[in-house]
Figure 1 (cartoon, rainbow, N blue to C red):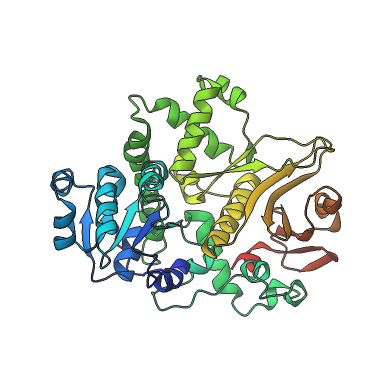
Figure 2: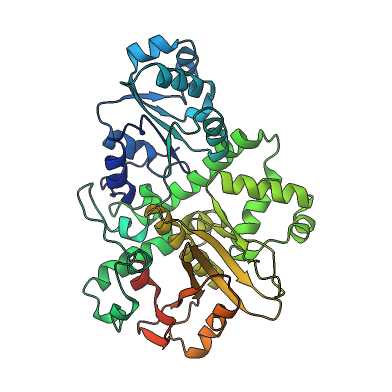
Length: 424
């Protein structure tokens, strides 16, 4: 189903972090979750080359592994990678038993279903494991071609970690010496998304599009059937198509259900499946100010624009909502990659103020307004003003992200800049 083999390997931001953490006594069990084909197997086999690789996806071998006692596991597989372990959750009990009896073991558990894997992990391995989400590539990762290539933090990552001051941003993206390479990576992200398999420059556009179509089909046939044991996939496919058309919009379950022909409860249940299988981000509405009338409806964003285009069988220009989802998804991935201690929201008031992405840190908020325009003006940042009076923590800084190459300091807490420069 996924016949393409990558000639280029993309480095991952998590690699160095996991290499360091894996040496700790608290890292005897490491869990990688994430959507199918995000590179969990590739990364784990690179990080742990001496470990035995066990594919739990194989039903014949799966039944054999179930028969092993803890002593046999320790004797035969003291250090192993268990891929698609959610296919046989009872093996997590075996891992737990080995962990509690021997100190010279280490297991890497991989799974493409957040729910099926993490439910069992939290039940059996709470406090005994490290858990990492491996998401599609970020723009800085797309720009790499080997495990040894440096992954440079984007200006966004540098700012939120305190390694770059807003005042030190370039006055224009045109002055960035790496502008051409960054634009190339962004254009790839816009057209094909960020799954590692389609990031190989030697593949034709047609091969990349075929891979994405196969990915969507496999997602429906395997991941969703695993999650829900659907007899009929048609209602879920309709919702998948609906959200691809309406990424970046508020979720009105009743209206969606009426349009598709399912109940609002079914819509909400299916949305949970989208989240569990790492296909979508559901941003909750920020609503802590009791003195202000706030919209409390969540917003949905597809995690990968290449998947959107495959679902819709679409080529050509992107819409404003797709542009917004691309940026929200990229910031989401980059914040996850640096292990940032954040909560993420959107914000909308009943009188018209709207913030596309609101990121809460322990000491305050970063706010983001997203415009697809090639030229922005101060008026475009109007929703970012007055947030200090609304939020329950200080506004650290607000950003207006667009395709305008010029960096503009609108006021002391609001900066407008080119999205590719900010996220590359």
